[in-house]
Image (cartoon, one colour):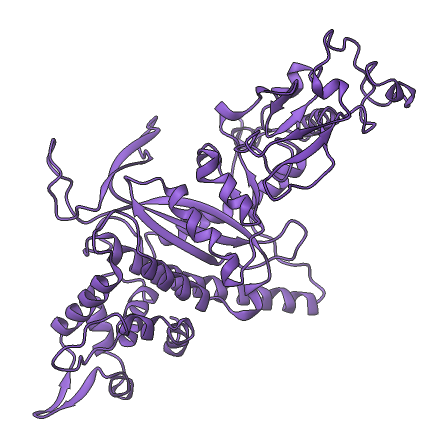
Length: 497
């Protein structure tokens, strides 16, 4: 159980309560339930693994110790004597908060005030020593069903008009996807840097949107606003669902905010995809027009690859990098940069570049150069505009060993939603909250991720203390047991008939 003092510190450090109070209307009588107490009740409910019901909030507040009830205004002095908070007052205050944070015309996207409140809650749930420990973020989205029943076929009338039909992974055998009615929730989780120390996987940012909207596009404004808030962007780890989006809706704005993309490419974006001044565009880079086709069509390494297969794959990707045109300038203010021929940079030998033929023979040699050399072959350098490979360009060459090691950190985003959907925990399935609309749902999700961060910190501190104890005793750190079992391992350990 998370201590009450810790939950109160999160609310006070965030400044969310007074910000919301300024948005609420002033009634004839003073409200007994303050916004700070309401948020505290929501955090208590979620910290106790209970569903996000207002009846649970009222129950959690009215069962606190007497001193805390008096301090938080749950028991107030009225003319007739002490008055205990009622459920109707809880429901009324939450309705005022949801109305103040919602848009005047709901469109399935959160208001700026709601997004700011959720950002403040998550930031307040992260200790100061971890705020600047890493700038790498792993992003992902998941499905969140609404409590409302879907509208009848051919109509749009239902209790939750902001919700819409969306797709999620299917749960049946051989079922790739299935429909659900609700919202998409997105989260950005802190991951360790490529060469940095380990850090706890804390949710740094989140948002939610109706399934009518694209979740990557809804997350972009949340991420690009972080540098202005004093949080620089580093590596953004994303799967092919983000990388396959139009460049103007994902890659370009993130690069403009200072982020470096590390993402898996969609099968339709892999391999050769056109040319620029004769250079072949493949996997986010420009390559020599004489690059062997098999090198350009290399697929990512399979998950069950053997060490020998991994070594051979790494050798092929290293060979592909020799044919890549090298960048010689940084992007200017308009996003243009210049690249040079790999033969000019001494990576390959080409008859069209006589100086390269005097290099030693441990480099690839172009035996059949183009009969009519394009601009990339007869010019010293060429200019690359920002729209060339804008969607597939990323930090490391795809699918090299460096990219594979860096992209392996993205699984932290999967664990974020795995803990939120754990049946033994809060389990954000249908019925988790019976409040309908984007604003109540996103406010509950923001509180849930703030509570989840506290659980992750508790587990992190316990693990660090255990490692320190084992180190003092001269024992190695405790390693995690590998749970994945392959068919080969089961066959090898099977008893003979």
